[in-house]
Image 1: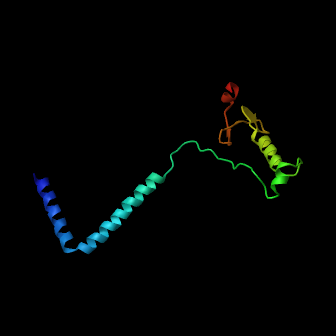
Image 2: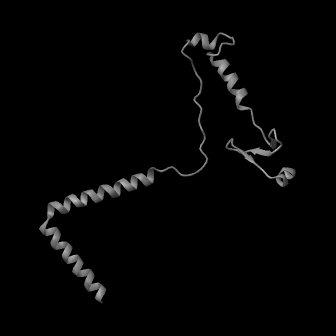
Image 3: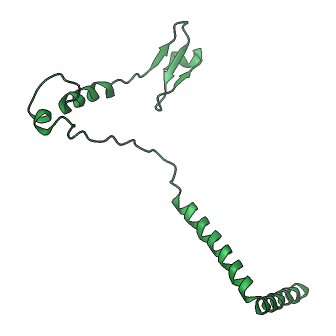
Length: 126
């Protein structure tokens, strides 16, 4: 029962301090409360780990004018149709499988786009 008596004495001491210094206690409680709220906001604001897709902005209209963007068919780079055509060509470039450097070292292209060197034994199985 020694621990219980110590706890009761501590609570009594805190009550006496609060009664003697009400303003200081209120300020301290406000600071501690703000810290707790800030911590909760920081934790809840974090994004979860996972795949994030980079969303591309849809091309709708350029500064040249609606009529030129919609009606004219030309090869001018500022037109919407031209930009859409070019975007399709560039996005279709994917390299799968094992590739080799000029010196003959095998590597693969990872899903993130980085290149990773592989060993000779793995080269045969892929």
